[in-house]
Image 1 (spheres, rainbow, N blue to C red):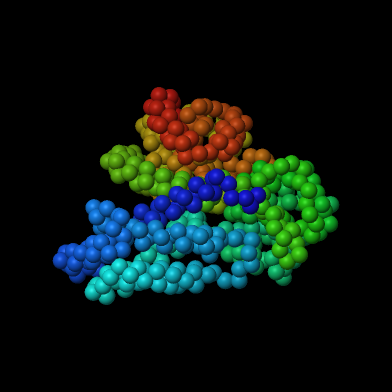
Image 2: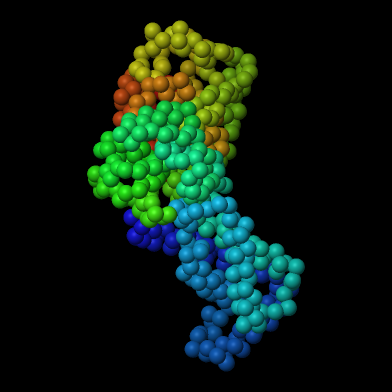
Length: 481
């Protein structure tokens, strides 16, 4: 609740060590290869360091006095000073923000870094450098600092931009100053609902669930005037929603249960904010980096198999070998999922005609002997080889290697209030269901494993599922959806 805990300290420490290592390596490499004029020039600088050591700090062993170590020390001291300021380490989503300040912040960092850098170079008599190369280096380090300042910019690079996210508001005036909060200013308002507070609980639950099936909703904003306690059902719903929630209240709210949230007083109102989005910030970044690395390596290793599969499909039933299907992804985002085509052309529309022979419940559609499957290509579905093109979806950021399987847009009609939670994580190529009961006919079992994954998600769990998937794919019959 606003208190810096061990997890936050560890997060800052990891980022500090990463920046220290990255900037130090780049600085040493840049000076050695571009900024020092030659090796003789570098050696002359080293002699000056030894001279200063003998005069001012002879207690330091001469063996550790090196230019590289000096650069590491310069970076270390600068980062200590930088991290001691709230300017760099703290970005408050609940501050009023009327414009994007990335450019302003960059030039502040540019001035801070270069004033410290040139002061250090002057103090240690590091002079006669290549001025042109030194100029571009002065711009590089502030760029790295702004890039890794927090998870927001890295998330943008990995495919999750704040400006592409949406929110729904309840009882928030059109001209409210709170729409200038940073958390709202860079997101788009998909729907604004005005409702009596006695109907607030049912209205919020109904509208969010309805929107979540058609629009990418990431944040729910609720303005309260007279209530001092939320309805128990609404509070429970918001806590388990796996989205960001902001409550703006005239009164001090008394919650029914204890949970992690942040509260501040702003503009004479009480703001309560909690973020139960489990794949956001650093968690999202680690998952995306892991997905990208593994998917790129797997794509390269499997290229011969992918090529042969494509040729086999073309030989069996002409082109195309890969098709795109509309699916629902993270927070209700629609995307095109790639698959090797194992069915005759234009057969998806026959689902309705074959519905009576469907052996699965809810949105699950499987036939024991599907007449739509191209003759001789059943093995592609048996070993899930038809799913391999989804590695491209993973690289693009539409999917993850591990997560609930993405379903068709029309299948969301079966989702009730609880099952909508499956849309709050990246859909995956495989998951808990695929390593346990992949051929189940019961939609409730899908629900059980999907919610179990959401409640227990970690990168370790993803790795564990991936290894088990390989074993299961070649040990059991698979005709994955």
